[in-house]
Length: 290
Image (tube, rainbow, N blue to C red; front, side, top):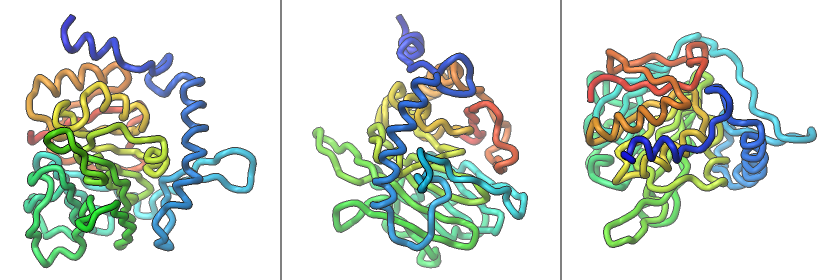
């Protein structure tokens, strides 16, 4: 049995259609996340700015999702693939973000914000341009977790720390962060150099994601089977693959994901995403430029 067939047979059930989990699976997960969401709210950074992407429990009986209003501008977020796991995001208000920034952020003005992760030098730089206003590391140089809660114009940015593996079987606690960008009524998550499946508490902290950037190399980050399980758990409308080293691995990922997601290949390295144009069915979109 080849690797692709093995991966397909080992995928968790998605239910009777592409539009959601079976009722039993979804309900049990929702109840678990609702409990951890309460904990996440107590542990959240005290910034005075509430996340619009985390479910909450109010005085009524049972959990309620956060409600969303239509974006005032009607504009989307421009997403451009730059390199490796670096994407350039431009918000409707013109805020520029570069993810997993290692010194290069693509064409255009200098980013207002860069995020970095600690796994390898292709995901961070010790010498960012001093003109960049906000340089956010996904790890704490002094040890322990780091928590960001930043608002710039129409963008709210936060993170959920995760661990990374090191050579020799050691672990660097909180060496990676899942950065979450809340803008234009969208919740956009960058998984960074994810090395393990998020815990229920971490999933509660992440909350709702509409768009996910996912590393799919299947080796130095999370193995493909586990990565696909994470993406099924996150239930985002749009998954954008990144961080792969061979087209063979990419093809295995796309073929396996096609059981539960539409798969589209873009002819451009950029896409504009808004709440209005999110795909009806969960979709994997491979941007050009790799």
